[in-house]
Structures are given as C-alpha cells and as structure tokens.
Image (tube, rainbow, N blue to C red; front, side, top):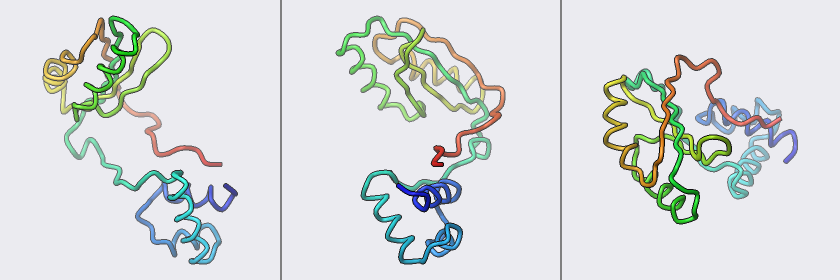
Length: 151
C-alpha cells in the first residue's frame, strides 16, 4: 500500500457512500486509477465490505454496556462452545477474547436498564461455561470508533 491507497481507505472510512469520482478528486487520482486501486484493495481483503454506520440513539438504544466474562475453564472445548453460543445472539454486538482478568469482553446495546436486564436474563445468562460477569455502563462516548488509522 502506498499513500494513495491510504488516502482512499481514509476517505472510504469517513463516507463509503462517496462516488469514485469524489474520492478520486480528494486523493488527486484519475477516476480510472482510483477505481482500479479500490478494486485491488477489495480483492486483497483490505476492504472487507461496506456498511452504514447507524446512530444507536436514533434507534432508541440509550445504554451501551461492556460486559467482562470469565469462564469456568479455558479449555479449547469450553472456548469453542462459548464462542459458538455468542454468535447466536444479535444482542451481543461485539465479543473479544482478552488477556487479563476476564476471558472475554462483550458489548451490548440496550434501550435502557430494564432492557439490559432482559438481555442479561435471556441472553448473557444462557451462555455456556460462564463463571462470572461484570457489567460496566458507558456514560458517554468521548471518542467513538470511526475506523482504523491508515496513515
């Protein structure tokens, strides 16, 4: 990747709905060169897809919750069963295997505290091999995720 590829990736992360001609103009490339580079970045798997970034507040999801989960063991079978179960719940937005005190950190969005209670009871408590959970409510996002640095 060179500086043109990085500029293209930055522009796409800001707004992937821009036309190729708008991106080409921003990064100072011809339309055909920009299009060719975008296709190469897609084929290389650097661009993994395109999606709309939704505003959780506009969707009525006021609670952003991070849950630290520790399992009963760290055997391969236990980890596999837990990870497979996590994939079954749309309420779990993200799940990360971590080092440190917890085995996993999951992120959940809920309408409010009673809705989180519902998610906790109907989803999180049904995950296999959970020894303990600790929930932390985000008060507000200081720097929400907008994309990866590509400098």
